[in-house]
Length: 96
Image (cartoon, rainbow, N blue to C red; front, side, top):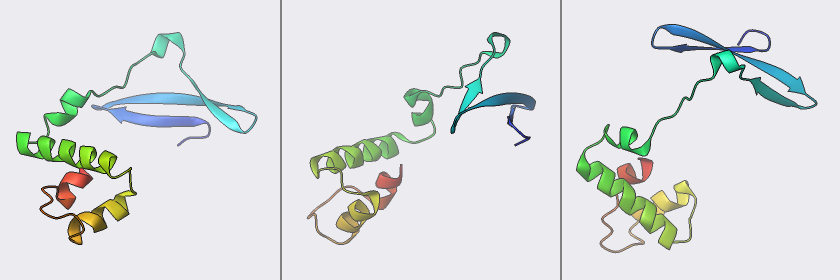
């Protein structure tokens, strides 16, 4: 961080993002000459994992929804503490 600038190194190339103070907020000044989209898709992220790991993460997300969205810490306690009988979800699935 340099003053009101944020330096980001992307694939060996430095990008400088400038921020402007507006009251108590900071806004990113994305000038037209430097417009970039820094986006990663779900499909790209899933490629980093095996099919079993992706299925486990989806099962964990679905189970967490069915339980009413407990905190991650509480969800891990439910899974590891035996509160859910024959639970196929593991802590690793929750972390993904």
